[in-house]
Image (tube, rainbow, N blue to C red; front, side):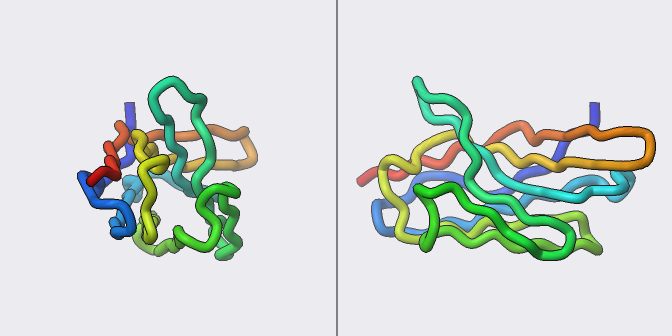
Length: 119
């Protein structure tokens, strides 16, 4: 099973910053969107941010103005810069890559990385 490789995460104080990165193997073709989702304890998974190959971005309402997603198409890599972090941002963050071709669609996931915001 091909998985995305996530780096970053950890423990940070409220108001602090963290940067996550996610790399998809170059063997994965036809990626049209990469993004980040998160799941907090007792809550459903939610979209954090996503970016298309052309650079269009989409953010969850709770992170707008604080998080920034960017990508490097040549490296199949996406970054999530998180600033002004709040305790409610504490969650496991998962990277996602959606692929689309003439034969159909599919998606790949990372193993998840823990982000904890606490003093």
